[in-house]
Image 1 (tube, rainbow, N blue to C red):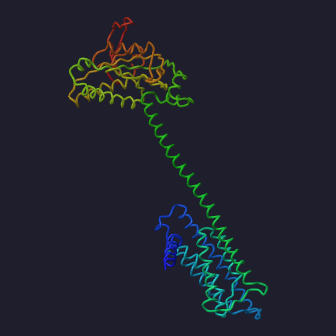
Image 2: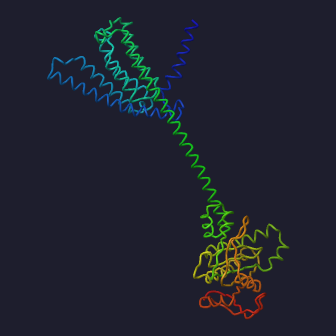
Image 3: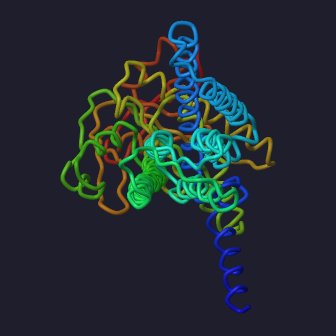
Length: 457
């Protein structure tokens, strides 16, 4: 009793763990990717195999019809009936395979396909009251299935055991006499013959299944690694774009592009490249908020920084609008340049428009916030030298007499006025309203005639 109970437990476990997954849907079993692939692979190959079998049996039926008309002696009605019955079963299996149920359970269609062919000859032999093994249909079907559907070796074994079970069962239960296919064949030879046919078929399926699984896992691992590489590349690209954006907030775009062409890091590029250029036609602007130093002693630091940030943020927007290059801010002073790093013909007009907009923008800010800020602006035109200095906190800066004069135009200027040099006046006098301030003593330069920019003509 203990042995019988143990056998039943083993049989239930075998059916539950080995056979049921072959006959149920992959989704319900939570199969891995490879098993889902096998599921689809079996479905496609069964579709091909059924069409081949239907076509083959159609030719057999045609051969019997031909014999009936032209070789009546070769015609066998039993064969014709069997072939028509098998053809009907194959068409039924094909129809079921196309249904949603068949797509979910290709393993059952596989068994129906196999037994429709292999058991047809056995049923015909049973009706003839003999037990006659088929040395044609069985090997042909077993090898054909192993070739077309080389996965799930256990399912192949089950279909083979089903055929052999029927063959042996009819001998035991119905006590049908054994009829060997040939006179020279013995029962022992027949047993070995089918044993090796089944073993070779199942072994080939098993080996192919292992190879396909290994290839699938390798391909899946490669695809996963490639996806991870793409994600990593996307992150690197995102970080690179962020770094480039930060760099563009420090350096002009053309300078950044030159640094990117260097096959080194940014710090090494700045050290080795020695980016410096000379420009003969440039306009430099300095702007300074009047009385801001005294105001800083009367206002909370955070409020002071907040106000200054609001003002300079609006100036930054104006610089972008006029396509000018902001150089830096020094305390409450704002410095920018026109005509570099990309030269332009209207560099003087662009800096003049910027200065007028800065005065207007500051007046609008005062109206909105209730403040009373005033600004001095100085402009000078002429040659400058521009370049990148530093390694860590590097900046794009300007040097030259034009820069110094622009700074003096601001520091010696008048609140809410834009003071220009005579060189700048000559470039703007035909398009802008300018007023001569007269001669002033400029530190380090002596007497200079300056002009005030009032607006456009």
